[in-house]
Image 1 (tube, rainbow, N blue to C red):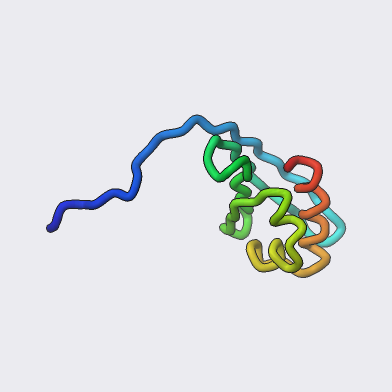
Image 2 (image 1 turned 120 degrees about the horizontal axis):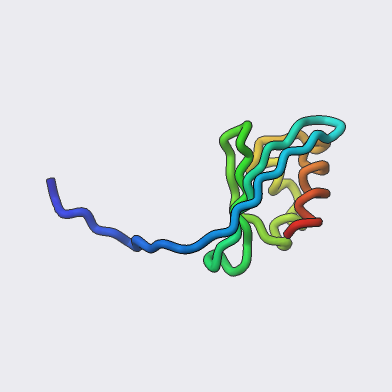
Length: 88
């Protein structure tokens, strides 16, 4: 086996918030991780759907991004965006 070449291998302290809420169209079980990486964006993990994305306010304004990243309908994405606007 050849020697492993790491692009980076670092540790970072994070703050993780676990949130679960029910909207009109779906239930959302999320983990929101805040770190010094990613230019102030959060790592948002959908614990039910095994999907995650690195999200900042600019991503919330991008049409169709939340639907694509989390494989949600327009209605479900609107509920998730409403919450994320409050916390990001």
